[in-house]
Length: 312
Image (tube, rainbow, N blue to C red; front, side, top):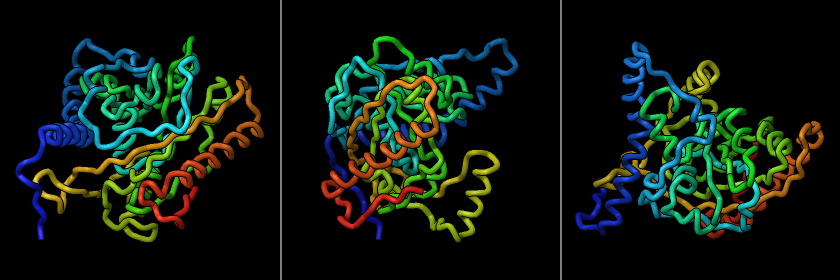
């Protein structure tokens, strides 16, 4: 039985729906359209500039999108005189919670963390196509590589927060409702960067991120997961078969649900050339703080008391 949405809903709800729809369109279709434009530009004299590695090109209009279903909850204030590196967990299907909570002002990020300018890192594919690259840069997105991270963390005067979705494609494939499986083992590059620049490390855990979509059965023993893993190894990307609810009915579609996030910073002493022991020590501290954040807030977000984080 298909459950249809009510005909009469508040204008604010309509605006929220429209904003989420354009976000999904951007993920799934807009970049493909821009690739076609990019191919055409290959035969012209126009070439790309290095803006994605220099913090992007933010837009106040993009920040004020009407995506107000969830609000950030801060468990510690962030001093605007410092720079920060945030490790965001979990990835989810489309990293919807990451973008909604960190790249728009609709959730009150500036109110929770006044004076902080946020930058979210994204994989290279999003910056290959003109128009689309400017579109995502206006939403606080920058290129996910070491050069880009160093440029932001080295800025004088502080007030920058660089966010990295650490789990990547492997964590994305595990994003199923009720699952709290984080891919973190042997991912220490962001830890080393934090030590080299002496910036505070901010663990961010998104409650409900894995609950906003269902995936087709892709357990480790399934043929679909076998194909997804092989594709990931060869291309660094993969194909995800997911579904949520629709615009005019609640039974199926691509509309997600949003959940709030919580944050707590870890103070870090600057170490230009950190040893492996120092990296491992901060790495263990980061994992411990993630567990602490989860345990402190999971009951508020309908997570069972006996549900534990799984780090692999």
